[in-house]
Every structure is written in structure tokens, then in C-alpha cells.
Image (tube, rainbow over all chains, first blue to last red; front, side, top):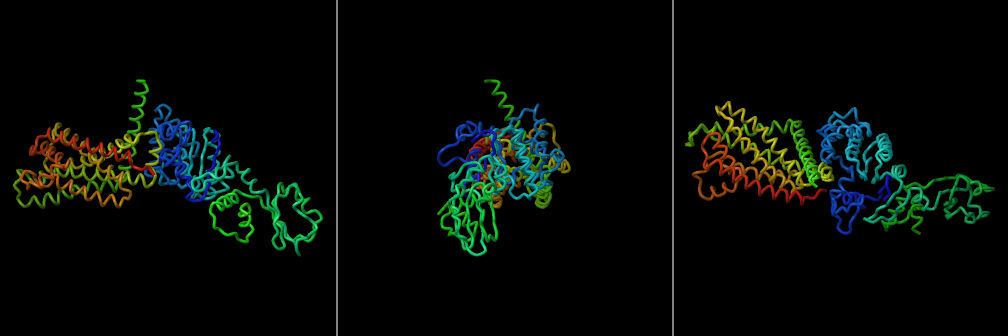
Length: 298
Length: 259
């Protein structure tokens, strides 16, 4: 793990993302092996590990009968933040997540997004080095989710923490994460930056449909930027690099083109492919995207 | 080295204060809990007290006065043991996880919780003591001091007991069920409602295994000067029970799964 990066943990339900976070947060003991967080062993130096991490759990874990401020106060005491800087730090984190004007309301009056932000504030109180976010935007509406993303980006910049987040929203991972690890059945099966992962799928996808049959005048595979060509009835599906600059060469002089569809691969496709690889037994379907998801398998 | 030690103990005190503060705020804001837990002992005091009191018992004082120390203990028994059940709540909605990832030891968390239990017990006992004045019971400073000490020790003991159960039982329903099997015997066998001097041998033996027996006796000594054993003996035995149960409680708490 690098410093000050946002690392995304993705994987199908039950893959072991939350378990991994629980182990790293010293809540669970690993059945075998060990882990080092911020240079401390989770088994031998649990207290040191706890001092260096902040965690936001999947389920809400703040006291809804207490006010936002009281929640933060309780936790700053639990973390042994000295009285002199306590109040200042509480206002700092409240401001960081934009809750200072609601700090004296009971948490049960907060919306889902505000609660999540309060927990982020709580997790940051003690200046952790590593910050775990277990599905921070689960159940939030699109607007709250975008607000949350803004705050997460701000936190990395202002608090200098390494963030490890799990999510099921691929756009979220794509947008926020510097690197992504895919977990399946407890194993990391892919680890790279979102753009690299997408590239590995074989580049951009272009589907050209012709009016009457695919003309035989061109062998698409001759282009150096084309990786793979599939034919399907009246259409060809071409996996290629740099659609924007290469398209004109691809379709030059071609006649009878009915439609051209162009798709940039998304992390969703990466996810489907990777989890498809591990979930064997799914038979390939005829649809474009499903076939695409299966493409590397064959 | 010494300075870090001092520093550490300051942190632990802060942690205890944090846990205590949280319990007290929750308790004071949940009015229904406050009212219900004060109302039940009063019901016993007045309905059972007047009801059985009308039958002319040979106990050396009014029956209502006789059971008054027992009702104080009853309030402590119910409040404290059920206080342990809130650990199950905490686990259900992940508050406990957020405490467990903080650098506070489980022993600290345990003790912080028992402090919360002690304070809520004391709060309720204060209300009952005020009503006692209406029954014609007078307390001098020493009596009050004795009552408060006994209430605090018993409550520490029984909150530990509740937390012990709470750390093994996963569902709130299960807790209620099992704890009823504990709370009612603790109360009935404590001699809160009857003198234990002339009980049949088997029953007397069981009452001796109940920590609440000694607190009822101690309070009866202190308030009514009617005890079976001496106040000092009661306190010593009660402290022994408390010590053992707390050790078991901390052990169970440490073993408890956080997730």
C-alpha cells in the first residue's frame, strides 16, 4: 500500500472485503498469516495499530441519541486526545465534513449522508495514518454520494491519510481510487490502477453494423491498433486502442455502414469479467456485453 | 517511564469518563427507560407492601418499612442486570465495534460500562429514598453513606453479571429470557420480602449463595437496625462476590467476539 493514496477493494458479495477490513482493524484474528498496518503487527501490536487507523463501518455506529458533537467528544476521549487540542480538533473535523451547524442536533435527526459524514469525522479525530471506509456510499442517493466523494477527495488532500475503501459502485471506484484490488473468495485476483485494469480488457470496443453483410474488402486484423475482431451476423466487433485517432483509418472507404457503436470499457466490465472468471458455470450468452465479459475467458 | 505511566493513566481515566458519559446521556434521554425502571419498585413497595402488610406479620416493624431495603436492592438488581443487556444493543448497531477499534482495552470498556450501571442505579435509588421519607423512614448522614456504598457495590457486582451474560448471548430476546431466570431468583431469594432467619435449611442455604442477600441485610441493618448478620460481615461477603463476578465478567468480555 502506498502512502496518501485511495485504494479500492472490490469484489463480489461475500468475497471477504469486510472480513479483511475487520482483520486489519484488529477486530478479527486472521485464521492464518498476519498483517502489518502502519508498520505494526495486527496480532502483536493491536493497540498501536488501533492508534494509527480510523474506521467507518458499513452499518451506522454512532449513537443516535447523542448529538454529533457528543459522539465526537466521546471518541476523542477514547482516543486519548489531550484536552487542550480536543475542542479545536472536533471543530476541525466537523468543518471538514460540513456538519458544524448541525453539531448540537441528535444524530437520529441526521440524514443517512450526514450520519456517514459524522462517522468519517469521528474516524479522523485522532489523525489516523490509514483510514478504512467500508462501503461509504451504500444506500445514499446520487447527490449525497457525490457530496461524499467530494469529501473523501478533500480528506486525502487535507488530512494526508491513506484511504482503503470498499464499494460496489464501479464509477465510484473509478473516480476515487488510485489503485484497485479485486478480491474473490478471499484472494486478490487483480491489482492495478483503474485505467490499467480497463486497458487490460483489450482497449476500446467498436461495433460496426452493415446494411447487407460484412464487406470482405478489408481485413481489420491487419491494423496494428486492433487487438481482436469478432463477427456476428451483419456486425463486426473490434477491440482496439485509441478509437479517436484511429477510427478514420478503420472505416475509410467502407460502404454500406448502418451504425457504429463505440464503447469505452468501464470498471463494470472489468468487474464482470473478473468475477465471471471466478464464478465458473455461467454459460456465455449472445448479448454484446455478456460476450464481451466472457471474451478473455475464451 | 514514570511520565508515560502517568500519561497512560490519564488517558484511561478519560476513556472511562467517555464511556460513562455516553451511558448517562443515553439513560437520561431515554425517558421511558427511566420511568419504567423507577415505577416497578414503587409498585412492589406499595402494592405488595400494603397488601401483605395488612396480614399482621411478626417481623418487628411495619411490613412496608421491612421490605423497603429489599425494594432498594430490587431496583438495583433489575437496573444493573438489564444494564448488561445494552451491550447487546451496542453490538447490534456497531457502536461496540467503533469502541473496539479505539485504543481502549476491553477491561477499560468493561469498567466504564459498570460505572454507567452504578450511576443509573444510584439515580433510581435516590428517588426511592425520597419516597422512603414519606413512609416515615429517617436517614442520618451515616445511614445515607452506608446506603450509597451498598448500592454502588451491589450495582457494580450485578452490572458485571449482566455484562457477563451480555457477552455470551447474541440476541436481545435470548438475553431477556435467560436474565429473567437470573433476576427473579436474585430478588426472591435475597430475603427482600421475608426474614431469612427461620427459613427451612435448604432454602436458607440457597439464600446464602445470593449476593443480594447480603446487601438487603446490610441495608436492613443500616436503615432499620434489624439485620441477621452484622453490617461489616455483609459488606465483606458482598465485596467477595463482587470481586469474583467482576473477574469472570472481564474474562468473558475479553473473549467476546467484536464482530
